[in-house]
Image (cartoon, rainbow, N blue to C red; front, side):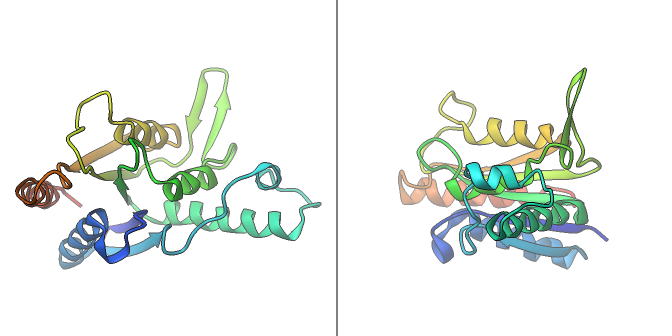
Length: 197
């Protein structure tokens, strides 16, 4: 049985196309026996990393209450990664990149000595043996262009923490016309149907 973590990040709630596609994926994979966990970083916002919290991420005995809370939350988010076989990330494009809410999640799970470490040969990811799926939703047509900072960024981050087996589902053209939106969603669902758990 596969354990799957869905990371939702859209600020649009029930109107989110990336969220609806993750719901579609979850329903399909549940039918195949997967256990699904959801982390919605927009519905339950995470604290933005600042100097105080960054200092607290190193741990220690002299952390103030705010640092302690953030460190405990970071530990919980990292444990969610460790507990699941596949990580599915909803990644709507906001102004050519990922939502601030998703970047905050990245900042809280990227921890030296915990999810990656530096070696003489360079950085080494410590979250290994996982697969990931990026569900990228674009209002325009950005796939495979130099305007897409969403997919390359997330692939690099995932590799940095040790997840190199990454598949991408695209739904694009969603704000151009009703016809392109319908096609974009249909194409994405076909791509989801073709994924193996």
